[in-house]
Length: 282
Figure 1: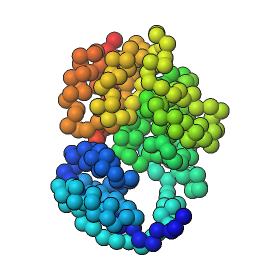
Figure 2: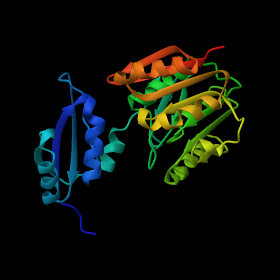
Figure 3: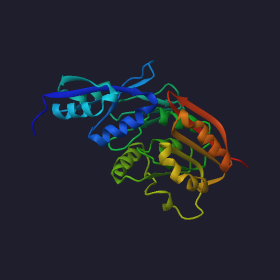
Figure 4: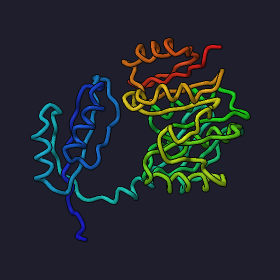
């Protein structure tokens, strides 16, 4: 395969609340990978993409004038090596750290959980605001001896965190079979015999199965179709942690809580993202 000598870059922006839609439209149009840049104080989300084909980049730029793309060219770089050299441990929550496999790290806090993770084909290595939101709220739940359901487990980070904090069972669900080898590898790497991850939607569970704690980190539009099943899977007195929500969706979710008998115990917000810990009213 011929080595790419030049990468053609396009950097654009949109209102922060429109980034999710912009991502969807750009991916649908053919962008292979979209990088969200560091946040600024201008109320905009800044992002960029690269391609080895200048004509392809220019086609995409012309298709989306609303994103004010600026175009540049960059010489080829070994980004994998750059990433490995710059990687460092991430503190996801007060008692959860994540480190890449090639980075050695021991936290000062003896009670901290350190997970060794590599995302590969799955989402969730701890850097994103939504993962931080779930982990922070999980710290307010006594997980000792509890059963936990992690919907859309990704890398398995939240399931492993639950296990390390004393959960007797932490079942993860995934609908993408490509993520399963990554999940199994991550659990094995962190000293677990198996992942307890299941492939499929929530109907894989037998009628009557319930969990003490359910965590779900996904967009609201993905959660809504399963919300009734989630309530049925939550045991009496159970706890529910939702993330992947926008601050603008807070009132809608709180109204749904009220409708189904959940009360909000805690909330966590970071930039435009909002996470919530709820409990079944007893």
